[in-house]
Image (cartoon, rainbow, N blue to C red; front, side):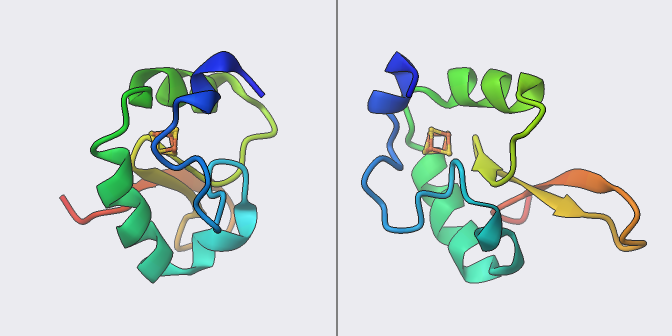
Length: 82
Ligand code: SF4
């Protein structure tokens, strides 16, 4: 685990959404995560990491990596509606 992840606002949350692909089908979790991400002191590091991590799957910096409507590709979607 990277040093910045030790300071993450989501650390200790049961969903552990930063690494967990299973949450991407649960909008209730996105909403909770989005509000916690909004107060996170390492959201910049989280966003940079998610953009470069090829095996990333989950929520980062208030965004969730989800399939597009066509199911053929993925896109970042805001956890809390903009
Ligand atoms: S921005 Fe969100 S997902 Fe990323 S470390 Fe902070 S609380 Fe966790």
